[in-house]
Length: 245
Length: 116
Image (cartoon, rainbow over all chains, first blue to last red; front, top):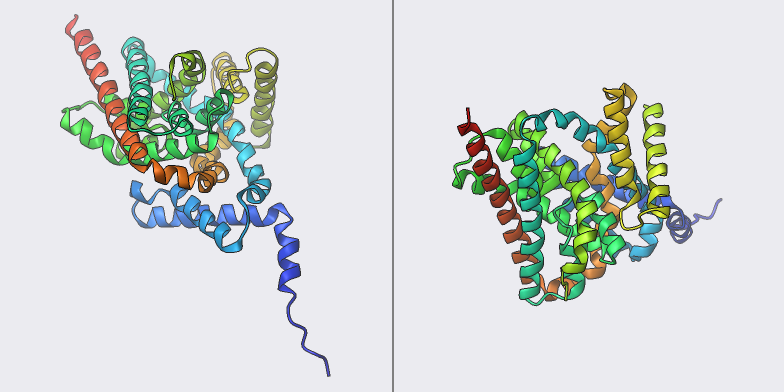
């Protein structure tokens, strides 16, 4: 007769939580669930897969009693690829460049005005409403596509995490609300609508624009790419003049 | 696909070096992006294997933010204390940005198309 051994859950747990495997499984599963919910909801911007995934991972960490630093140790392999993904943004920008033809001046000026508006309004309002310097600092680059925004924030000494969160929230809000603003203004041409969404709401706005009309999508991705490059160059130069506290 | 990934990683590497030794204010991957863009213009086309990598990345770009964005748990008390400021700032800012960009485009392209 064998004695029934209890499953050594504790040992299995100690072993698993020591390797990056757990964090990676958690991240990918949460994202997969997020994507499934998003597809099921017919791509409703409110069911944003990243927001869902972040919520799921945060709750799981809480339940497992795993500190964030420990999770990040494993998940950093996914995080690292952000840089690579940033470089690969060159390809959609290159493809969108045809759209600049004959419209360089209006597009670039609109981009500069839009970019400045996003910084001044977000930083100004957050300060005016009494947010602290950490939050205000993370507002500075939130309209730039998240991988670049985080890099910029890091160099300027602002929180890359909060910047990523604000960037994702901006993308969600823009993807949901931009059409009402554009309809209200009576904007008819797809390229103008797409470009405005891309400047304000980067990646999430762009995917929204693509689902509405291919021309809007192309201009949105051009706007997102150009805003990314401009933001990376201009925000560090402007940073000295942006008071965060 | 692997060849494309290797090329992109190499541009990222060159970008990191430039950022480190030349202009630390600009993130390395942004240098890599600009260099790759120049390279694509010289080539005149996007190599097939690179297009595959780029499609995969842009399709699942959101996945890559999750580890960093989950860090929001560390800021929850702060965000709760300033929830109103955060929501208003983000909301108004994105609406204004859409409006200003669209307005500039409309004014400028209207004045352009008036010309013969």
